[in-house]
Length: 310
Image 1: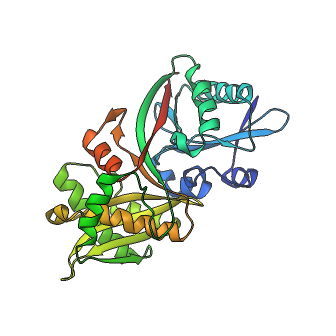
Image 2: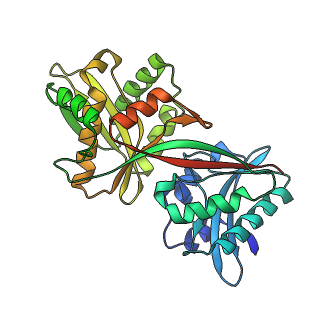
């Protein structure tokens, strides 16, 4: 296998499509300041097989370097033997620069077959140390009833939420609306002791690039009860990057209502799934967060991160 570092423009022209938005040149360039430099890499033998976007730090080359997941972009379906050779070549490249290699793959539900091949190929690299996080997603139904019928707990809480007089509104990624939603989520996370990893400027830049949607629940007196900022990470998959409620109104089941309304919004646009992201950190489950996501009817799936020391 041959590995070649190329310009962002050449890398972008090499692929007709990407597995998700976090593997695009546009997203990577937006976040380029978060690493020393970006390595755009093409791997080929008789033909182009795969590409990787890696951010360099003092100790490692990482994919992603500023996203929930990264991993390879393949030109087509590849056999396991080829994928093993691709990752060996990538690992040799990192070690030639005296760097560790860190790869976080998408959650398995994105592409179970190909991602299973990647897990196998990465796991046999010398010293590979996997960290396994649990992530949640929901296949969407029709727009009238997008939540799974089997989830009695979610439906009970939702009936309570639907009985409340909330107004649901949808906005674009304008600075005013993004900041308004960010402030609600930031206050929620601060009161609950959760970190918010994106600054307001990070969110504004990223939301503008990704044509994000903003969502709000408001009470009859105009108080914001809950808000979300949602990205389209695949052509048919929406991911709430930040969401949260007004803690003083939490007993009104505002998050259940917000989730239902977001699901209905994207189901009407024929999206296939909502991606709620992980309920663990560095492999340690957050049991309360997992319980909440499961109570909404979201399905667990594993996400693998591999650290291969130099």
